[in-house]
Structure formats: structure tokens, C-alpha cells
Image (tube, rainbow over all chains, first blue to last red; front, side, top):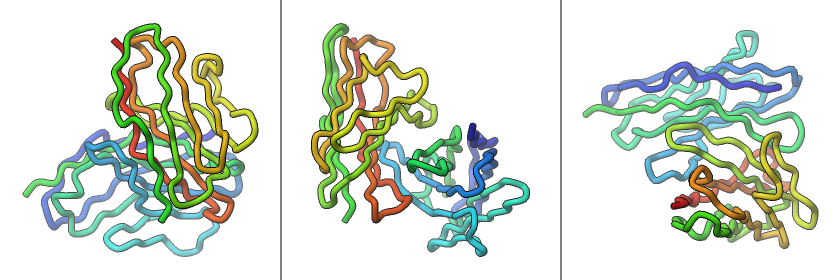
Length: 114
Length: 116
């Protein structure tokens, strides 16, 4: 069975600073995908970034980067130059090898302070 | 592109009634749709996987007779919460993917169900 763990239930970050959100996972699948989603208070899930287990380089998307350490089974999200609009819940998720099913971590609430 | 809508966005119903939630892919054909449930301050939990033209596959612990899923077309999947009770109050989110989107799921905006 797959398991995703986000150990930080909540954190504050100063505007314009960088923040790292932790995510560790456990799976026996040789091939898998890792996602990060943002969920603002309105509820919609916003896709941020994706990392494939066989990707050689860490994924980056604008201010988002994924620090993928396969041997440690971690996929931390780094948000650079935080903005007030980054305040939201952030979920790490893993795609199962077959069927595109996603397993989500417990989430981390980020509050950006001005 | 890749927009998914849900209707209604919010519904309040009396205990014992049934509620239908629609999930539509507006600009693409969704070969697979997923239904998630999210309780307050908790994560998303996958309820079932819905493929067009076939029976839905339910996750362990999800009652298929209580949560009826119909994926009648490539753009529409419905979730019906039958005989709803207060403990069914939750945020229900659908997502959709296509064969060509490979591993990306496009999420709907969610439906907040409150059962009185």
C-alpha cells in the first residue's frame, strides 16, 4: 500500500521569503508519480508541479520547485519569493502505478505574513 | 482548456433524501473520472474510479449502494448520495483525465454537501 506523509500541519512564512514543504512517501511500485496541489479556501485543487520517479532532474514550474530525493523517498516542495496569495493548503500526492489513482498526504497549511 | 465543472457547488438537504452531484468535463473527453471526499480540515480520500460505459470501481470501505456513480458519457459522471445522513456531510470533489493527459488529473471546483 502507498502512503504519503506531510509532517507539517501548518507553517507561517514571511512574504518574499522561500518556504519548504515536506513530503515523504512509501511505495513498492518501481514507477510512480508525485504531485503537489494547492487548495485555497475556495476549495478547488490547483495543480502545481509533477515529478516522475524516473525523471533525472528535479521538476520546476515558475516559483515552485520539487526537491526529489528518491533514495530518501522524499519530494519536498519549495516555494520561492512567497506571495500573500500563496496562503492555502498544500497537498502532496502520489499516483499509483496503474489506473492514475492518487493518494494524498494530510496537507500543510501555509500562511504568508506581510 | 481542461476545465471540469461540478453542479451544484453547494447543497443542503434533509436526512433521508438523495442528492445527485454532476461532474462535467467541458472541453475534453474524460475517459476516467474520480470521486473524492474531503472532511473539514482533512485530506482528500478517493471514493471511486469511474470509467465511461462501465461500472465504477469503489475503494475499500466505500459503500457502493450508498454512493451511486454513473459515467454515462465521456463528459459526464454523476455521484448520487442515497438516503443521506448528517455524517455524509462533506466536500465532494471530482477529477477527470484522458488517455492523452497521461497522468494529470483535472479537478472540479467541488460540491459542499450539508445534510441536516
